[in-house]
Image 1 (cartoon, rainbow, N blue to C red):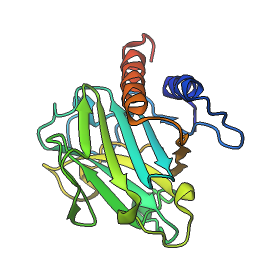
Image 2 (cartoon, helix red, strand yellow):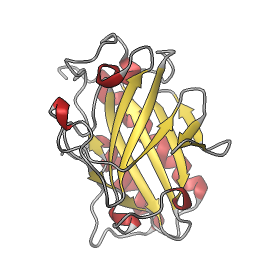
Image 3 (cartoon, rainbow, N blue to C red):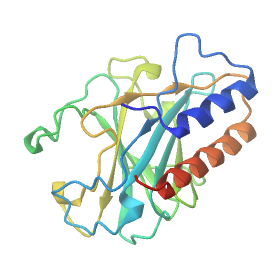
Image 4 (cartoon, rainbow, N blue to C red):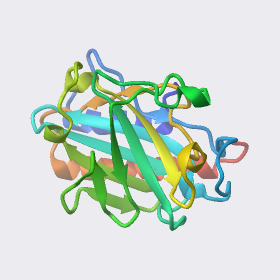
Length: 217
């Protein structure tokens, strides 16, 4: 797992709030450009299904998770594309083990769609929970919809995989971020305001797009 330019932006954002990451490092992850799965049945020209970075932030005071994903192309470019976040709350299983993906474990999935809708466990997320800005799609999920199955909420682990709904099964998955592992959330500093975090998320999305345009990547 590599810390990305997104992580540097996060560090600057946390500095603005006066928070010091005493025992936690930013765990935003970066994902290589163009690393579509060989089993993906869709088009490798679908840049909006190619993950560049993924982050999860947890605010224990508000009991809210914020999921942020930046792709190599504008969200919604693939009309049948959507984004699946797998979360391991303590009872996660390697559901993709038959496909050689043994490190991605989850016991709940969250779906975010380019039309601004989302769902978790078949329950629709409230209106406004999903927002899109260029290459970045963000979802805000109440912790009440993600009750623990063994882990403390700040210790849940995550993986993101975009899908092309024109296909079914494993062939619909374009990418895993991380490739064969989960990552943990970054704790949100309690004093941070919602406006500050929304502004920061916009900065992170911009950094992801700069990375996509960097030559030699």
